[in-house]
Length: 175
Image 1 (cartoon, rainbow, N blue to C red):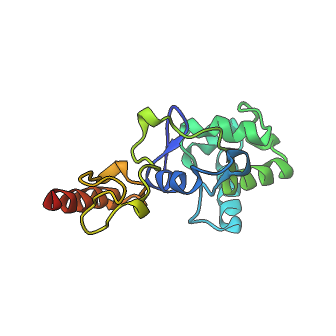
Image 2 (cartoon, rainbow, N blue to C red):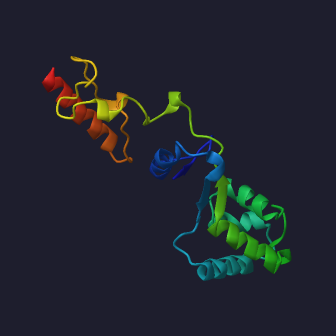
Image 3 (cartoon, rainbow, N blue to C red):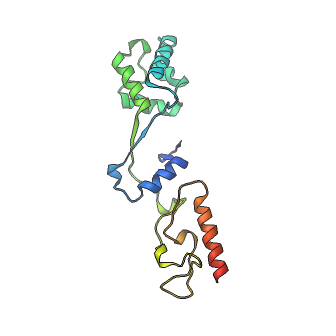
């Protein structure tokens, strides 16, 4: 997963978008564990250790060993902790809020990218109306379909390319 200038992207997001593209986005929430290799207890111990090392520094500086720089202000804002707050004045509740936010970073999905930016599209000609051996339309003799014009989409990993190649091969051989 990648954080981008417009939101999030990457293979896992492309997979998720194929599953939610027909959903009401108001009912969809993306929840990330920004430190999945650490249990809550391990993360708490790591934060306590860093707090001890950087006790006279601002919290934003302390978190640079734990999180990417660009996400630190976002995390602190979600926790309600000022970026310039000194570590030695962080309360237990603020530390626990920090831990919870890192382990459960929630994002509301406001939209998917536009059709013009699509990597894979969904929708198209219903495959029930096509002979799967020849890719010829069952409704219009001599009309063949393949690839992205079909109502087929798959998870990332080359499956959509395989659909395009296979249906194109079948259609081309049949013509």
